Image (cartoon, rainbow, N blue to C red; front, side, top):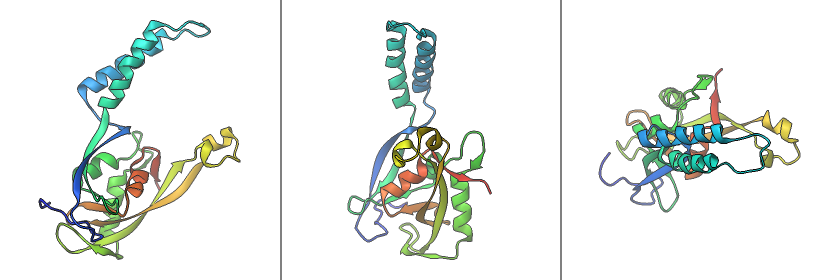
Length: 199
């Protein structure tokens, strides 16, 4: 992509911003060692029914917390300071939009690329890289329903309930980039708890 990228919404130049997502794990040798060592130390130090705090739990937590931070996903994405729009390029698409580890849901990146290839609906925006019209798609997702989202449901039912939702986005299949009108849409889709169920 060229040095200066214009916002598809017409706001002006976009900026590359580095984002750290603590909810998504990425491989970092030091972070992974800290993360696992902290977990093992905490698990081995917990004594059920003991009223005392074991020093191993504290040391484990002191290893675990920086391990989680270091092994979290770091991406550099284009952001617009005016409209909060976000552009994900190829590498970020692959890193942020994965499927679940067990393969029970669709790989989000593959699903979106396939949907863009077969989309017949043009976006109102042009691709900031090649200048052609982007395609518009709606991605169906399911998210875990949390107890605080619906206070009328008992916790037991809320834990087993999923919420159907969708995310609107534009993309250019030739340039392999995605445009989200605002950062909240991108965050909603990239959450680990957001999945695209297999049909």
